[in-house]
Amino acid sequence: MHEIHSTLGNRNEFKLIYNPLLVSNTDDLHHPPCVLIGTDDDNFCIVYSIWRKVFEGASPMIVMSWEEAEMASMLSVAYLKTVKKFLDDSEEMCERADVKAGRVLSFLGMVTSQ
Image (cartoon, rainbow, N blue to C red; front, side):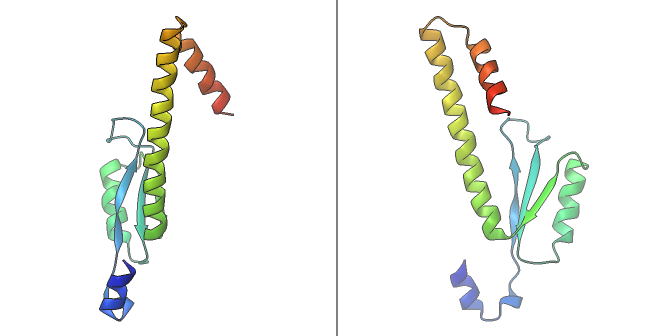
């Protein structure tokens, strides 16, 4: 991205608004826990208002620089995949030990929410 800026010369000629990320650990993309917007332009009101209408105020809108948004996007995907893998492996271990996975995973949920 920095190469694009140097190619364009004057940074004011180029505006970037990061495509919103619907941060969600579920398959329900109509009700994400938040919407992430990355921009280095103070005039992002149009994009913000469009997404605000799409989600009708149900999901918080988080705005940060596009670099921060890209990093947050990558790390959130890695985190959610890691948690899913951990839960899948935990459920499999419980099944092999003939232990009720639901009870164990509920306990883990209580411990990790503190």
